[in-house]
Amino acid sequence: MTKPIVVIGSYNTDMVVQAPRIPTPGETILGGTFSMVAGGKGANQAVAAARCGGAVSFIARLGDDMFGHQAIAGLKADSIDTSHVACLPDVASGTALITVSEDGENAITVASGANALLMPDAIETADSMIAEAAIVLTQLETPLETISALVDRCAAHGVPLVLNPAPALPLNEAIFSRVAVLTPNESEAELLSGVPVTDLESAKRAGEVILAKGVKTLIITMGGDGALLFEDGSPTMVPSFTVDPVDTTGAGDTFNGALCVAISEGKSWAEAVTFANAAAAHSVTVLGAQPSAPRRADVDAMVQTHTA
Ligand code: RIB
Image (tube, rainbow, N blue to C red; front, side, top):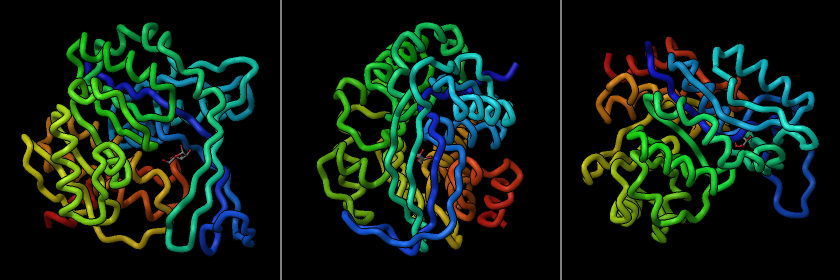
C-alpha cells in the first residue's frame, strides 16, 4: 500500500479582489472582480500534493460553519483523507483577505479563527498515521507549540519532516537540526539567517547561515527565478519555467506539495525541485490558491518542456 503524505496546517477561505495594484496604508483603490476560493497554506499544500498524485491525509481545524463544511467537501473532492480534520463549535473557520495586483503580486491578511486551535493534541491523536507516513509537511500558520510536537513525533518515528517556514516567523533554534528539508522563500530566509537576501549571491550566504544551524537539506524558493537547492551543503540554482503570471498566491504552497510527492517517489533532489518548480510555475497562470494547483499531467507536460 502507498504510504501517505501527511500535511498538517491551516485552511482558509480566501476573499480575493483583483486590483490595478496593492493599496498603500490609508489608501482606497477601486478594484476589479471579487472571488471567494479555497486557500490556507496547509490546505493548499495538501491539495497540490493530491493533484500531483500523492495519497494525502490532512490534519486541520475548521469552524462548524458554512466555510468549514465547504472545506471538508472540497478536500474530499480532491480525494484527501479528512479523518483528522475537525469542525469546532463557537469559532469561525479561517479566512484570508487577498488583494492581487495586475502583475500577479499579492498582499494577504489572515483571520486565523479555528486554525489557532490546532493544538498538540491533534498530533497525539494522529500519532499512528504520522508513524506510517512516507513524509510529513507543515508550515507556520498554526500554533508553534503544535509544530514543536510534530517535530518531536516525526523524529521519534524516523519520518522525514518538510517544514515550509511560512509566514516568516522566528523559530526555536532546536528545530533546525530536526527537520529533513526546510523550504523558506527569500524573505523567510532573510529572517532566519539575518542576511538580507537581494540576489543569488546573498541567498547563498543566507543559506550557509541556515545550514550552520543544522538543517540537512535547504531549498530557498526564489519566485520566477527558480529555487536554490543546498544538497550536502553545496548550492545549485534550479531554474524555473517562464510563464505569464496572473496570480502568485499559493505558488509556494504548490511548490511544497509537489516537492513532497516527488521526494516520496524517490526522485533525485534536482529532479524533485524541477518538478516542484514546474507545478509552481503552472499555478501562477491561474487565479486563486487551490483553484490553481495543477494536475499531475500538466506538471509532467511542463517538465517535458525543459527536457525535450
Ligand atoms: O500562501 C497563500 C495562502 O496564504 C492563501 O491561500 C491564504 O489563505 C494564506 O493562508
